[in-house]
Image (cartoon, rainbow, N blue to C red; front, side, top):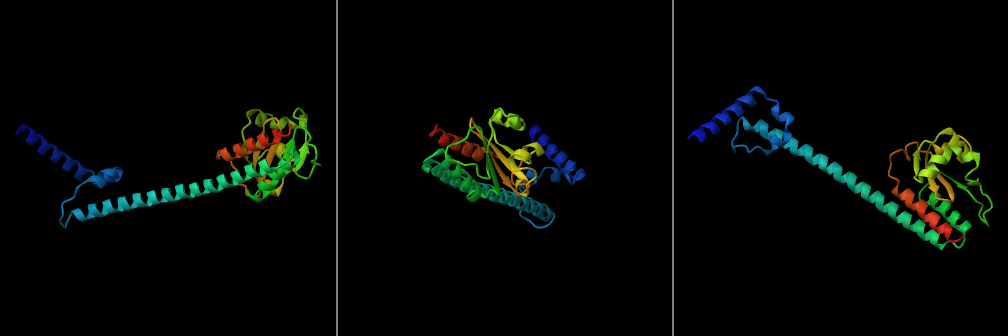
Length: 224
């Protein structure tokens, strides 16, 4: 009997609390959704409507997240296919010069790079310096702005400092509003510029960029 009284009293206390705090369920929408309502008309209709609104909001948010995940999966799939095609193109190249030409062509065509620039630490036989290529020794003082990137061997994305832009693109280039800079371990640097200032940005995923750089370095070393 004592337990029944306690339960009854607790229920009254809860009801009294809710009457004093009519907006309590706005702070705890999960609680509102989990409540079981009596199947009758009247005062419960507003709470039922509220529960329905909460469920609809959750459903919209879940659909939004699902669409975002699906879009990301499609983007990653397209990137994976392009990266695979790039690897095949590098493997088919029959010289270091043609390997580098294949890399630049793929970045321009398959990855829609508005501007591609390459710095090699050592000259490559058969590759007369085209407009996208410079040969600069790694210890050359002009390479000073890139010391940290070369040491970290990690891609750098975003809007480059003027000193980096000056060496790579000859200054402020409209096709280098944002840049992905890829260090090529022991080989050089590769930069992909975009006229879209937001295409490459700090914090973006760089897995595919790193994999492409590693593929190029591995392909180049076949001809050492």
